[in-house]
Image 1 (cartoon, helix red, strand yellow):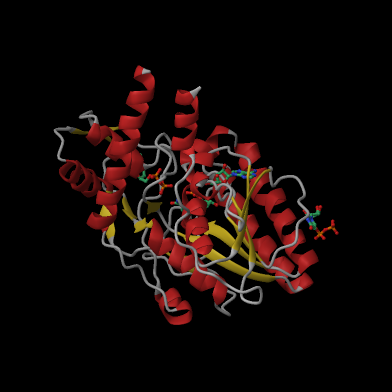
Image 2 (tube, protein in one colour):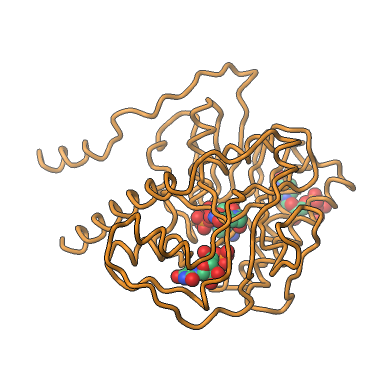
Length: 343
Ligand code: NAD
Ligand code: UDP
Ligand code: UDP
């Protein structure tokens, strides 16, 4: 019995991270859909530390309780297991609508569900916002630009998306999500903010989510070959998750209602990226390439003039610093899963 009690004690967090005290007037009730996911959990941490009340709604498709367990039991925190494709009736001041699978293998796993989440789910969140008068921020994506013909991509670019390709469930789902936001804004006076998020990485990314950062780091740490899809000349621009969180909050708090790109404009080819990660991990991985994936966007880099001008935001974390933190996280996760497999 003593042993059992001891192990229980170990699981109870010693202390919550320091939270600001806000009086009732300044404290907001904030709903974060998809709050148990990678980005949502970091946003939860930030807003909890600011002293707000946070309600997370998540169906745990890719999210994990572990990402937010350090808040369990805190009086400002609530976690609701709910699928946003179904209506939700609660009272809140702000909604950060992040619920949606985000990595290609996850959103392609059940394309119909991805479309339902981004259309019916978004309608429900806009309907909720309309009823209670809440402000909504929609997590859109650089994928609305598809395989872009304009480079870098400004928000005025309409995009180049294959409407029936393998990525369409996500790309078109997010495009409709934007269309719905502006329809509710115009017709129902809902206050909307639209963030077009570019590739983001950091701790709490899902180990098996198949995105390039997690794949390359895991392959590097395990001394396996780093596998590039295609010739590696395609480019991406990666932002660290804390920069994204700052951008989302700045956009929510601003008066700016048009879509805003939130991303880091430092662009690399995937080939360069493989070398950077291999060298940072310090392993002996070989870099190999395999067949290209269908409809893979060839170049992507945000034009962030709008973000700088209207929400006074720009990314601050350099790639190497962000990658080091992410590698450290994955090292621990690997140890943890190796350990649990041994037991
Ligand atoms: P993630 O998969 O870690 O988080 C998504 C969360 O939404 C998960 O917790 C998942 O369980 C939840 N969810 C999915 N469908 C749901 C449903 N029907 N009902 C309730 N919850 C549901 O992904 P992420 O990287 O944190 O992405 C968050 C948001 O940001 C997504 O909307 C994504 O499209 C957008 N985004 C992310 C990136 C990126 O690089 N990470 C880039 C562009 C846009
Ligand atoms: N909705 C919700 N929570 C609310 C209010 C509405 O989930 O607090 C859902 C509602 O079930 C509806 C959707 O949001 O399916 C759109 O709401 P809206 O008021 O625009 O449409 P209507 O109810 O008139 O069809
Ligand atoms: N990619 C790769 N190897 C991997 C995973 C991805 O070469 O193991 C490539 C992929 O083809 C794409 C880029 O890396 O060109 C970014 O892929 P990711 O899935 O991370 O994001 P997205 O394509 O949605 O930007």
